[in-house]
Image (cartoon, rainbow, N blue to C red; front, side, top):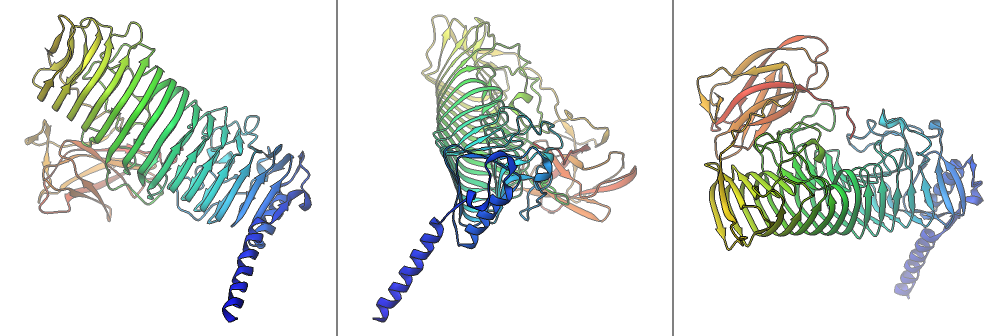
Amino acid sequence: MRTRAIAIVLLMIINSSVLSLNAQFNIKEFGAKGNGISLDTHPIQDAIDKAFENGGGVVEIPSGTYLIGTLILKDNVEIHLQPGATILGSPDFKDYPEIIHKFDSRTNGLYAKHFMIFAEEARNISITGTGAIHGNGLKNYQKSDPQNLRPFMIRLVNCQNVTIRDVKLMESANWTLHLLGCCDVNIDGVTIENGIRSNRDGVDIDACNRVIISNSRFRTGDDAIVMKSTNDTLCQNITITNCIIRSDASAIKTGTESNGGFRNITVSNCVVRDIPVHAGIELMTVDGGVLQNILFENLTMENVATPVFIRIGNRARPFKPGQYVNHIDDAKDIFLNNITVLNSKLPSGIIGMNFKKIRNITINNYSVRSSVAQNPVAFNKVPFEEFSYPAANVFKNLPAYGFYCRNIEGLYIQNITMYPAENELRPALVFDRVSSLELFSVKAEVRKEAGPMIYLRNSTDVVASFCRSFGSNNALFAVEDNTNENFYLLNNILLPGQKEVVNVTPLKDESFFEDFKTDLKYSIASNEIFKGLPAWDLQNNPLKFNIEITKRGSLQLCLLILNNAPNPGNVLVRFEGKTQEFRIDWSDWGWAPITLLKEYSSDQKVEFEITSADKNSDLKISKAYFRYQDVLKTD
């Protein structure tokens, strides 16, 4: 009997809980008008609060237009928009009270302080139904800057078990749906329409874990789906599938904020169309975070500016004051499979840094038809742009029409087909500073009779087999003399009279180490030359120098440095009682950008000491330059 009584009590508790969660709270019963004129913020919030006090429930939004300012969503509450229901953002900025949340993020206060729907640390929350949430941003909030004077549509911070299903999100005044530090999120059957630019993204997945986006449609003025890490937390375990995407910016992107980095991302079975400026796939890490284990497969693209852009950069912007980026992590293990592109205007690019290569890229079953010919820059004059804003269109007039690849270790390309635009004179593919390159069944049309299909320079360990070209060009491969090593050709297919390889005169590389503007410079005066540059050996020999700081705001001390030892070494920067440390794990000359922990409000002469943290390391330095860094810029 006692056991039975306990069972009955437990059943009553469970039933009570289920009834509580399924309880419905119609906002009309709380006084909502739904006429699009009266402000209905308080009645809807009262319904949410009542559902929360009840232990959970469904807040029903019946047919009508409900003008609101800010709503706070709470634990175990579902907002359900019935057919014909619209939540409309107020055009009066005063209806959105300032909210500074507890969760650490670069966006907090800088990007946004005002929201239509907001939640922090909420559990088991949902926004569902076939109605719409309208940000009223097309007619209002047109001024782009400052960004935080335009309300976000939905911002969910550090929330768990989130469902957003079937709703239509329209004309947000700022980012549409920002998931920050959230876990276990399911977005399904959602439509997002934002017709204008100025930071009006679709979905921003920021420092999140376990997020699924499926069966959704996007038409956005800014990035449609963008993954970010605006603090030092990994954005990871993300799945995007069965979506149709149109955007005036990028379709699917990582970055630009990338302090924590990105790992375990799968994108599949998507259609990407009408990307006039940026890229269909844009994978970038530029603030020190990792980019690893990324898979894109079964995508079709049409009318895109750049199909694919993969980039590791060196901005190294900290996510909050009093911090700095102390290392540059890897970009590696990226797989592109079964992708077709119609009407590509610009070439795709995979571009690492001179000292930090992108590693292990696989491209399989890729087809592209290009529609715009360009007059290219010379093979030796493509700039590094390591500190520039990371975007595909930073690199102008690349010397390949299909893929331009530079600074990569481990690139495997199989079963790709490329067709150029009319009057195109560029080769299909260019490889510069690529090691461990494998080409299998690479096919491309070449319009220039005297031009090659593939151009190689500064590359090692290259294997090419079963490759062939269409057209009447005279060579499959052009190889710069004395700049490539270990080049193996197997079973390639030649046209009548076509050469497999032609050797061409090597082009001298220009120095790109000073391709950012600054007038605060200290260069080494030394008789020791190491890898082409004057070098100071930091082993048991600190470098000391004085420099007049004349720039205001945030400064980066950029050290042109390398590590000649097999293991990573740390460099120390000491100035005015402060010590900062940066990991050097590269063996060629490259910039270590160290954001100084002190700013100077007036001109001041400062003494710096640069030294090695480890007696056994072999660090060499050639230059110490200072650059202004705009830490308040929004992306």
